[in-house]
Amino acid sequence: MRTMTSLEAQNHFGEMIDTSQREPVLITRRGRPVSIVISSNGDSSDSLFQYMKAVRELAPLQGKEASDALADVLSRMGAQAEIDGLTEADISKLINDAE
Image (cartoon, rainbow, N blue to C red; front, side, top):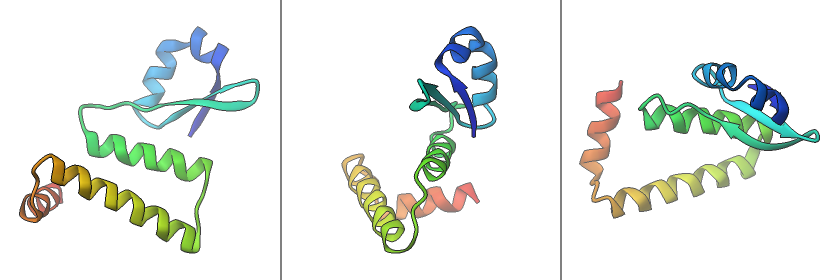
């Protein structure tokens, strides 16, 4: 993941946007992370992957903590899928079509 200071991001905005097309860009202010820029590229699953990659680099999880975090994310995704009216069959089809 590329890191830029807030001043660099401001002065090189185009470069930051171009870089975010390839990898997340971490923006820092006074040495502390304040933001992550991720390109959507019109693909929400890729954006989610990029976000998860950035989080993994900032706060790596291991063991039970990682398992619990994954279970929490999957639970929230399932709840949102239910709200959106997606069935297990719909989700399976989306997964299979993506492969």
